[in-house]
Length: 162
Image 1 (tube, rainbow, N blue to C red):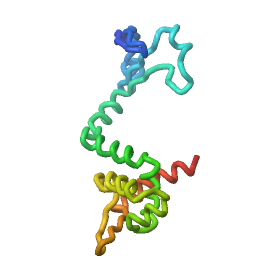
Image 2: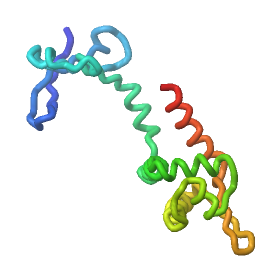
Image 3: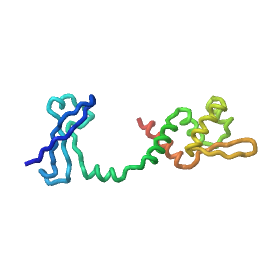
Image 4: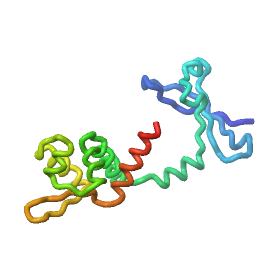
């Protein structure tokens, strides 16, 4: 006989529902997984893009939990995407991917003021997405490394596919 246990579940209204949990692994001789089924009254409300039955593949979950990134790393990646998510900074990265430019030329290309471009460049520089070199009294900017180009190129490729 399949062992049934009860598991608390919080729905979108933060009320607790008791759902039936079955251990299919014991019944079918396969890898351990839990199936959580909602009472039949909730099944009709299911969205077509959400599973009708919650199946938890415990072996996969355990393995992936062990490989989760640290909070510091996830925060850093999120910050990069947040900064790159600004349309002006995306244009700056795209422009600098093509050629090293001084701040004045970059401002002219993008039709913006030098002060505004400098602000965006400072944000990009703080995350090591761009770097600068000074030649006399002129400061030239370029992408920090190939990783920045790869991140932008993959995002661009993804958008163009749609």
